[in-house]
Length: 226
Image 1 (tube, helix red, strand yellow):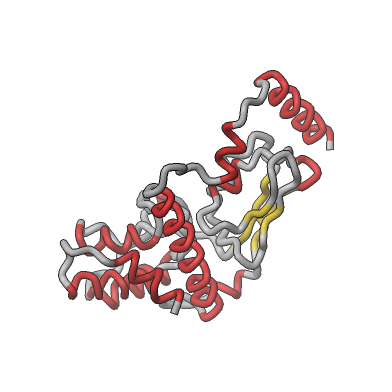
Image 2 (tube, rainbow, N blue to C red):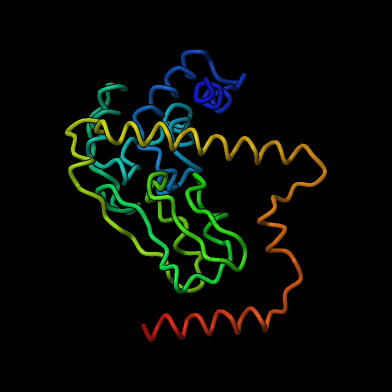
């Protein structure tokens, strides 16, 4: 029930017809829910909506690759087109891992994760919940120490000629729920006086810039010497 509620919250839009909303649902179900934004939209649902309302091409999902393009082509009765490689190449299922010995607890990766698959506290070691990670890579650029690495999963988990594999469908359903739950909380905070989540408050606390730079430089030195 919770999953259905979160999905309906995402779709509800009085400017869309019931047919359009239904089609957005169907397209979203075919997407891998990595929430990586490689399609240049703010998540898989936003891309699904753009396909319906903006005639966005069906080849803008690198994590889905040819299999997702084929499934979208079937649903929309449009020709199959090659993946837009300018947005990235297809990669088999993957997750990320934090090299914990070099983590300084800056929380930048936690804030960046679209499905809240990273846990930790400020100035303490962070870790990735492997079972919840979508491999979106959004946590990698903010990391000041480059201590987040990609770990490929068994390529067979993503093997399907059309659409998502059974394993990918299961992961997609969980990822969609976690992404929508995070967005729902963010939207709720916009309606109350104190809009900063605890981790953002912590990042905003007065901290000596020189102290933080010293900490980063020390950790970077240890990282480079490993």
